[in-house]
Image (cartoon, rainbow, N blue to C red; front, side):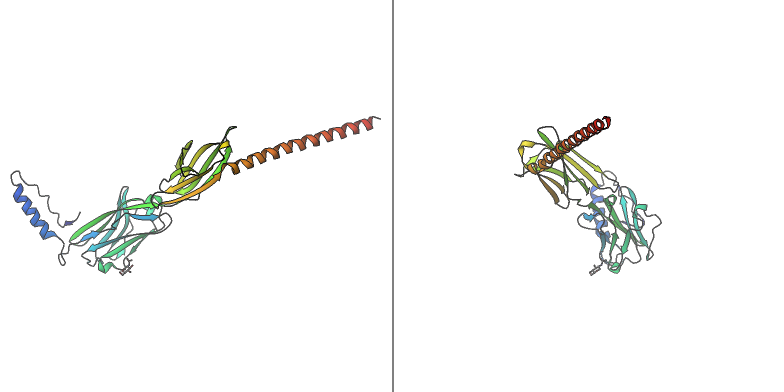
Length: 288
Ligand SMILES: *[C@@H]1O[C@H](CO)[C@@H](O)[C@H](O)[C@H]1NC(C)=O
């Protein structure tokens, strides 16, 4: 990952000279191994994937080993896929000319500890497209080295909502929806024993803000009178949001609406009948 300037040509051993070449390589490695004063260094990135929450800040720290002063080095953070510069620092200042446009105004180079070879890049606010592989790269006048690491972007969405519609005479359809999740969450229907119920349909789509909207439907028998819940789960944060519904309660509004509707029709009929009678009477009295 690192190299001495000028580049050492690759050691392509001629056939038959393998043992000797291995020895030379070992020797070179020993000589090139970083030691204080040699001007060489390793870059150490975050040890584990950085978990970054959408809308919050993420700090990507990298340090040199040994902890040499990096004030006069060039320090860059870049991405491989899609390739592009995230932030660049050189000659004691930021150089943003080649920065990828989506990072504009969102990066800050933290150089408080740069003399100890410890720097960090703050990105704020985090958006879903920030997910991916990053590299932090250090280059002195004589040496360069870099470290690669992963950024995982995540967020937990809203508590789900259950919408109830009459299916046919014996069934009702429950639709559970929720927005604002990243990455794609897991959606699950459970009965009151905690057992999985298979959904009739499930859709997950990405909205304009890059976050997932999920929708899952379940068909249940009206007679079941069961309690079911819809659970949406973020697998990175191990966070889940749940909503319960009781079929018995869910049926009540429907029956209630039916009664209200019937009453309305009866009232309407009664009113028109009265109007009719009054009208006929009025005509009769006029005729006399
Ligand atoms: C610099 O080092 C100090 C002491 O180790 C630490 O508390 C601080 O968080 C570091 N700053 C940055 C930006 O890493």
